[in-house]
Length: 251
Image: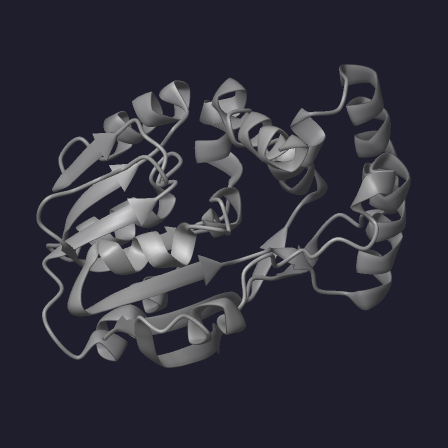
């Protein structure tokens, strides 16, 4: 119960930085949608997005003439989502995935950097319920980690001191096994799309300022962590922008 409460609190922390989230969070490459559509092997006309945020992935899918129902539980994020997708075939819905019910099923259910916010006890089964037979589940993740191992280790050590409870936790809290083991899905695949990026210290720290773990810190501790991170960053550096996909087909 405590874990669920903490997840809910962190999930609803993003609205306080909705504008920064839209400005600094990484954009998904078009190749993500290409990969999902190729995998589907059939027309995708309707999609349900889990935790749409400000519409980073929403816009990519909706620009392909896919009608997207975009779920976003945080009212402030949902407001930004509505603004950024106003001229696209998108219906923003202020609701959690767990609470959402629909009459017609969808051709696609996808989650971009949001699947870990959904109750793991119900998420895969609920996705199956909301998909047409043969419909696709797509789980999308892009960490944007520092590409240089030494630089990554230096920042990781700073974060370990800032978040002691983080040590030993899984930074990719969804996996191919969860979907493979569920009897409703078949043809489960895992893919990685390379997407090299570069960043400046200002951009990198601004993006960290939209991460829930930092948002839950008090202002002084957050500022101190950012100061230590800035001190180890060069003027420009590479990010590992690889996009990780888990794709599955509803039986």
